[in-house]
Image (cartoon, rainbow over all chains, first blue to last red; front, top):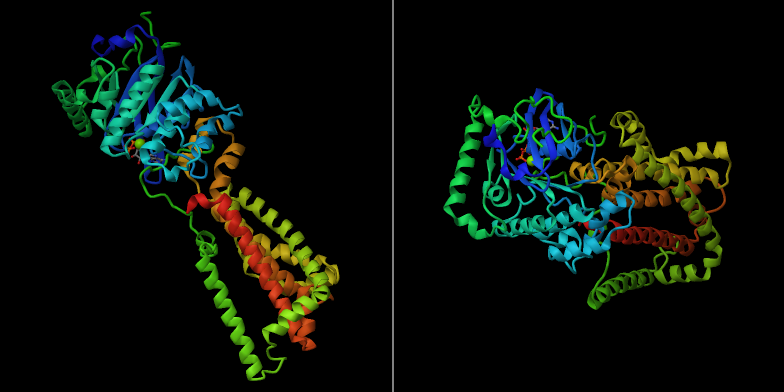
Length: 296
Length: 284
Ligand SMILES: Nc1ncnc2c1ncn2[C@@H]1O[C@H](COP(=O)(O)OP(=O)(O)OP(=O)(O)O)[C@@H](O)[C@H]1O
Ligand SMILES: [Mg+2]
């Protein structure tokens, strides 16, 4: 069991715990198993990525963690508290920037405050806007901005109300390679500065390796946890890292894992299907009361 | 605990979104391209064309001595418009009152019904045929009936205006409200938005372009109905002037009234064009 324990996670409490997440959609052509018995535990301040083939249930899983969707069975807890509806400690960055086209940038970023009926924290917002390089674009409308700039605005919006967890669903999937690299550097810098807990979904393995402390590989539908990879490279990471042999090998290893997972009836690495930091004595369906850790 | 706004759905990103809902054929493209003249030369050309058309009409009518009861020359129409405006003004006032009051009721009820009914697809299916019936029935046909019930005053015309404009506003707004962008609703939900907030922050602004189109078409239908209802009976309003002047062969005055009516139509169009530009231009 110790092989899947993340050394970095040992000295930090579990922040976000998913236990036995299962989601079955009822469709006209019968039930569709999108996610099956998926468990994971993310430490406070960890950067975790989920990779998996297209359609394996990544968005489904993330939406359930965000409280936007119900699970068929299983549960999600944040700091030990079960999530059944959207939570103010969770910020979400969607696939595509998802800005409102009828609002300018400033108004888009203030939307969370409007909905929460709070005065927008302009000081914090302005700092974030400066940080991502959007200063001076406040009165521009989304259609006047490039894809990269839209996605920067979406990140500012998600961070504006200072959530402790950031969920990102293929945020850079629609961007060109250069802009994507740029955005990845930005995300790492922001993470190093804020130490939010980030759960990042992508199907770009290089991106996952570059960004994360751990990569969770999901199998083809129904999405199960196939394997967890520790990414040991020191921080801050630079783009040069991506040219090294270690990264190249790791990316290929993960790629191979995804391809194995894509062919059914392959569950050799049962050991890895356990949630990362859940103790071996506790079955996944019955998690510990809070934080899911006994050896503390 | 299925989220009542999102149900079990997640949006298909990357897939082409149904851009304008199903934009009904009623939407005039003019709302986006618009009548705004820009340069000096554009304005000059527009004025020149008008001068040429009016001038040659004047010349033709005078040269061939077209009898006045067929078509009076533009100059005498203009003279009638200025000299007899005092005579026509009170009637313009009545028509405007019918239009404003009837439209205020019709448009607000139509808009509200559209907003509510689109949230309940089943209810929508039930009432859709009746709304279509209201849209396609010429309200003018009902005016004699309304006069029997409400007399020859303003009421029957106001009701006719409301019945003509309301369904137009409703049917177009409903098209707007029916657009659902799951990703945007999910966005609002992720900040904890209530049903009402999802409506005010997402659904309503998203429907705005179609609402503006509906309001414009409703207003124009309202004007047509007000004038038509005045022609059916009673002794006031621009419609009544049209019947009176044509019956008594006062053609310059008749055409002066026609001119006022087309000016009203253009005013309605420009007003909603500007509203659309301010509140719904994000879509173009
Ligand atoms: N509301 C729904 N009803 C029925 N099936 C659904 C629904 N939403 C998603 N699915 C199906 O569930 C599976 C998982 O979808 P999901 O979008 O979560 O995958 P994904 O990993 O995010 O895919 P992608 O990489 O394309 O973003 C897909 O096969 C999808 O077709
Ligand atoms: Mg997805």
